[in-house]
Amino acid sequence: MAEVQNKKKRAVVAMSGGVDSSVAAALLARDGYEVVGVTMRLFNAPNEQVARLNKSCCSLEDVEDARDVCRKIGAKHYFLNFEEEFQKHVVDYFVSEYERGRTPHPCLACNDRLKFEFLIRRAELMDADVVATGHFARIHEHEGEYSLLAGVDPLKDQSYVLYTLTQDQLSKLSLPIGDYSKDQIREVARELGLSIADKPDSQDICFIPDGDYNRFIEPRLKRKAPGQIVDIEGNILGEHEGIHGFTIGQRKRIPIVNSTPRPMYVTDINADSGQVTVGPAENLMKTRLYASGVNWIAGTAPVEPFEAEARIRYNGKNSPATVRALSNGAEIEFSQPVRAITPGQAVVFYKDDVVLGGGLIETSLPEASSTASGETSGTAETSAITV
Image: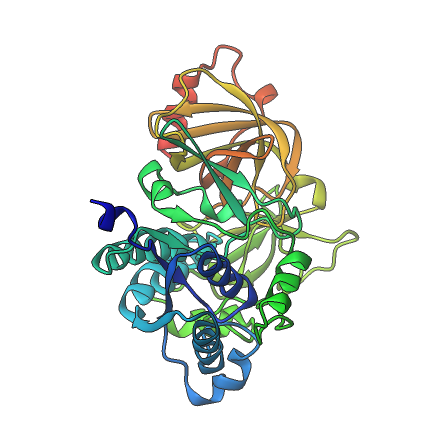
């Protein structure tokens, strides 16, 4: 038994070649883990994209950087092909959401299905004790129950894209850099002699390194939904070639024929009719939304409505809200109007720095003052289902 107890624990680390995942691997190695670095091949970029990919992630240079770090810390490194899974669960999802007039967040799908589902399965085959990533977030365990917390660096916190984690996944996961600021992570990298200490962060969606979403999406569409651009009163202001080119809150590149005295923003997208509604900025301000596919970090949904801080976009601010769990999702009412509630994005609930859960925004809901005074959570749930 002593031999088993003294066995070095093995950690499989998802390594993108950037400073965050590299330091995560180095910290685990320093703590005595046998580290196995895994870089996921997610797509096969055409030759002309290689230079642009160097500004993103997943380039050949990134793979070599991950290998260099593994050599430096005495870790094994594997380059695993996840192209098929990435195409199905990230790229196809990304395109289909725009096709439906929604605005997806591909990192959510990548984390949920690839890093925390398929990678954990691979890690089990490698006899790993833990899977680690370079996300700025924290995991706390108390009496066998796990909590997900925001990273200590508010400017780098990535807990928003981790709300799908389950208790089982949290029990197998390590987030070594969540207690550090970004500056501290770079300093640790320098102290450890890692060559990537000053490597710039990736900024773009990895599979669209030039940031031109339309050019990427259009050839992959199964159908286009052209239609009219109207104001809130139904007056036709212009026409468009497809709802995939719009997102709630958008101001630029709206093909409106008639000039308007005030800036106009996309306030609604109807996937069935292809109609895009535009209006002034105040039309984007809403207080209520319905979210589907809600995951509760604790494993069970709260019975009673509760007060929390809710965030509706990755780089957004947390806003006070009342959250009511429904059998098919959740209804969220903000204390003050929030801007541009966008279907396809996530809404994540926080209590201080603890992530309570989250789900995908399906639709904004009518303002409480405009609903019938006798409306209950049951009627709200019914209306949400039929959206």
